[in-house]
Amino acid sequence: MSQNKSNRFMPLWLALCVAFGVLIGTFYANHFSGNRLNIINSGSSRLSNLLHIIDDQYVDSVNINDLVEKALPEILAELDPHSVYISAKDVQMATDDLKGSFSGVGIEFIIRNDTIHVQNVIKDGPAEKAGILAGDKIVNINNKTFTGKIVTEEEAKHRLKGVKGSKVKIGVQRYGSKEVKYFLVTRGDITTHSVSATYMLNDSTGYMRIKSFGERTYAEMINSLQQLTLQGADNIVIDLRDNTGGYLESAIQMADEFLKKDQLIVYTEGRKNPRREYRSRGKGSYQNIPLVVLINEGSASASEIFAGAMQDNDRATIVGRRSFGKGLVQQQIQFPDGSMIRLTIARYYTPSGRCIQKPFKPGDNLQYEQDLVSRYQHGEFFSQDSIKHTGPAYHTNNGRLVYGGGGITPDIFVAEDTTAMTSYYKQAAVSGLILQYAFKYTDENRQKLKQFTEMQPLSEYLTGRNLVSDFANYAEKNGLRRRNNLIMKSHNLLEEYIQSRIIYNMLDEQAWNQYLNRDDKMVKAALEVFKNGESFPKAPIKPVKRNITNRH
Image 1 (cartoon, rainbow, N blue to C red):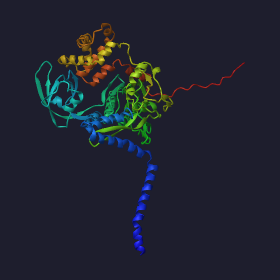
Image 2 (cartoon, helix red, strand yellow):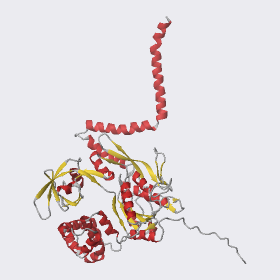
Image 3 (spheres, rainbow, N blue to C red):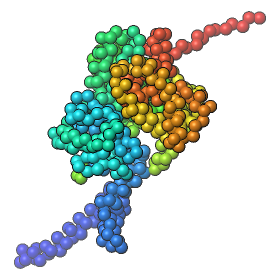
Image 4 (cartoon, helix red, strand yellow):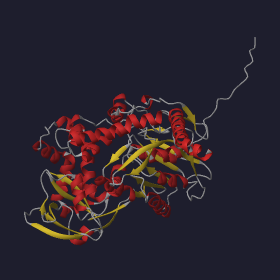
């Protein structure tokens, strides 16, 4: 009898337990999940629902994938200027330069008049082995005409790059001939270099230009340092101007080579990322060599980490102009379709505690992008007194004053020289006419110029060619009005720009750097630092306190 009564009430007990469980669950969900559930329900669910509604009910058919592709960059742009979306087709291109190699045909090209012009052919690369020459115009790829509006840098790279060992048929026109010659090129590994120049500035000072921080940068730097040491370098200039950065690890490895043991290089910190410090191991071979680092407004990210570590540890003198101010740490997150986002997860801080990142307003990327223009208009490129320090003051290890609020301010300021700058020169440079003329001149005189294998003899030859006047005639035919007084005032600037590009076209990037550095003010300032023995910054001299006794 009692067993039957118990069975009869069992459904009621189960119902009460379920109801009680629901109440408890609701209580905990409301009190402990809080805003997170609300955000999920009101945010991501609404986005998902919106896409479903559009797909199901919109008046015309819609490609939802294209819609998402366009929406993702806009969402990330509302966070900060460096959180970005990269489509699947652009991922490879975005990572090739930093990896230090890719598979392709081995040419440098420019696009002129909707046609690819081969600017340089990489030595011993696939294109050179197949017979393609600098100056060739590529007009056909894999039996398809490739000229006209379809020719873009992105599309050209897409067609020329490919899997190692795969073949591509390239049709070219040589200068002076309308005939199309075809070459079958087997794609291979192409190495890209971070260190673009290594040479001696004088008998005791070595120079290296580092244009990016990739996977191979540290190894290339060590190789360059060894070369310079063998050539008698007692001092080193590291040029990071216009180096927009790259891998954090490369900057840390570089800094480690110059610092004593257990010195702080950089630290990162974010809302979900606790402070993480990167310190030197003290095993570097160049801990005591006098060092100067060159920076400018184009030096960013990893460049600023290296420069900041050298400055705050009083290890090197920083020469130039205030750096860009990019101090946000991005993490790459890949989606199943191959696309990815670079999401900001932390900030970089120099050893003294300075945040490298310059101020920004979330969603206002236009103002952020115009920052360098604002600096120029404000006069910061021409006067150290015009630099605005918006952040707090900090101190280096030796007690020297440095400032936060964005970028690295150099120890020695070098103004941009605009004495010969004119509106004519600016138009000639911005329009691309100088680049076009330099390539045209190179192409038409390639056989004569081949006899010059070094920068100095080639420059001396070009100096007597009356290039500026010839350029002015070319520019006038292409829409830039000739203005003789302005051309005369900018003559040296125009000649330097034209010569530098011809030297680049005929020789290499190192020769180009050597030519531009001959009269470079920052390089001269660096040499002066070594001459005065000031590469290791010293503590500021404190005023001596004296007891003054009043006598009557």
